[in-house]
Length: 116
Image 1 (tube, one colour):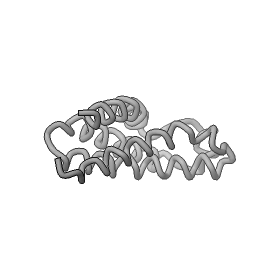
Image 2: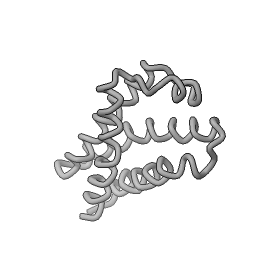
Image 3: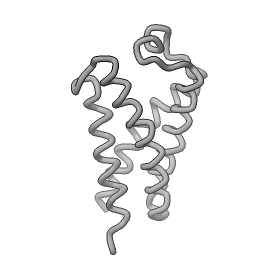
Image 4: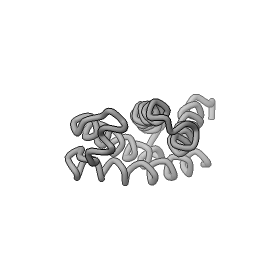
């Protein structure tokens, strides 16, 4: 039961950013793109992955496969976000939110392998 709450929390936190990237056609601003060394196509792909991964997490009550696919999609995006923040010099403080969601997501993924 608790992993459904993890999944809903993660999905809620990720879907807004994903939808924003998709709606803006990947445009996040010139300063953002320069600081993180990304282009609009990369951001649009990240937006789609975030949105689809979040939907899978929201549907995780349908089965473990939904959780696994959702967590993998989101951890790809979160992993890149963590690396980009660290490379931009933001350190732990800048990547704290992505690290938190990555950790919760990983716990949720590992929970799908329990015998229950």
